[in-house]
Amino acid sequence: MADNPFHVVDVFAQKKYAGNQLAVVHDADSLTDEEMLAITRETNFSEATFIESSTPRNGGYDVRIFDPAEELPFAGHPTLGTAFVIREFVREDRPDELTLNLDVGRIPVHVERDDDGSEQFWMHQIPPTFEETIDPSLVARVLSLDEDDIDTDYPAQLISTGLPTLVVPLRSLDAVRRAETNHEPYYEELIEPHGNLNILFFAPETEAENDLHARVFADCAGVPEDPATGSSNGCLAAYLVEHEFFGADEIDVRVEQGYEMGRPSLLHLRASKDGNDIGVAVGGRVMPVAKGQLL
Image (cartoon, rainbow, N blue to C red):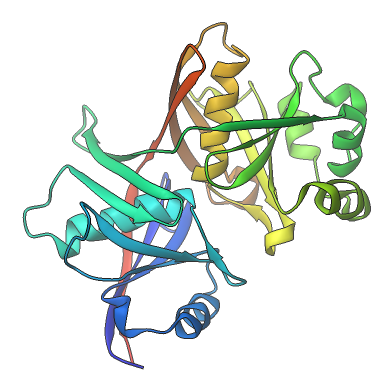
């Protein structure tokens, strides 16, 4: 295996060693698919990314995303984390805008600065697709909740901005915290007929000054709970404007995730609807944690 530099970063973290960690490997043209998958398993994070070349191609950087089981067409925190590494450690000019060429398509990323000078990385996801709704009684069984915990004023719906997610509105923060995967109906009644997907469930009760509290289960991908999930929160952003959850077809909200795991994360969501078109952007902080070189 050739020598390759790598960086480990925390994405969406409110403090270091929280959020969702990611390993980003440089100059991955020298690695085989099997080596990329083995490296991802060895790092033991939910995903790892591989920058194929330090030179842009076709207007962007060719990047591949793996989880421990397979290559993925898209994932949220790997996109933002990789953009951070390219800007900080590949590009000498540290541009505020760049593009990642992923299997799902071209994903633009830009940097914004808060009043305190901290930087937020934002990605514009591909247009969302809205699929079938799921019966609230099944959702309740899958999440080990009572049917009264499901907010039936809004649908539980399958949505994708590159990876599919079931978005579920709950009535209370207590319900969000009580939820746990009931594996028999999860696999037999949800995953078998609909395929592998994340489940994001949320409530408009939160800690601090945030707008929503969310959790994400991804048992089918070997991740019982994810601390910060950009792809699923992109689906949530689309859901909120499609169903006018806040009474408007445009949002700019803060979502907290990962609190139950001791890895508090903050995701910023923007979305707007124009006719049948919905634009989605997901943003957050990225923090460097470690660096090294493959041997």
